[in-house]
Length: 78
Image (cartoon, rainbow, N blue to C red; front, side, top):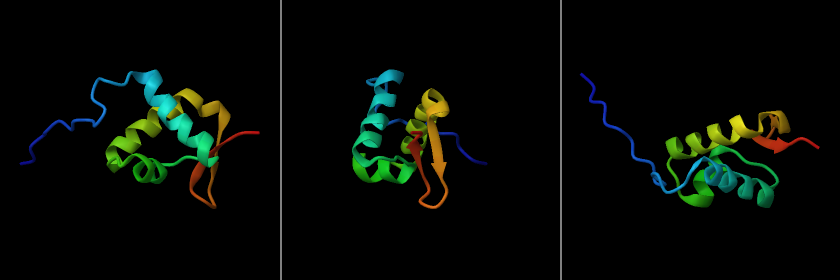
């Protein structure tokens, strides 16, 4: 039987939704693209934490993003 241990986010409650989205947006601005791997490498996050940040970012900016299948990352639409 599996134990359901809650995963503690590195950011905890210190970052509200707007700050979490801004964290991803700042990386997107500097690299020109963003994906979960870039978040892991830049901020030293786990895959789960990076996935959570990406989910928040995608919900906020879905209409302004496009998926680049060749390079496996999101870019802002031009």
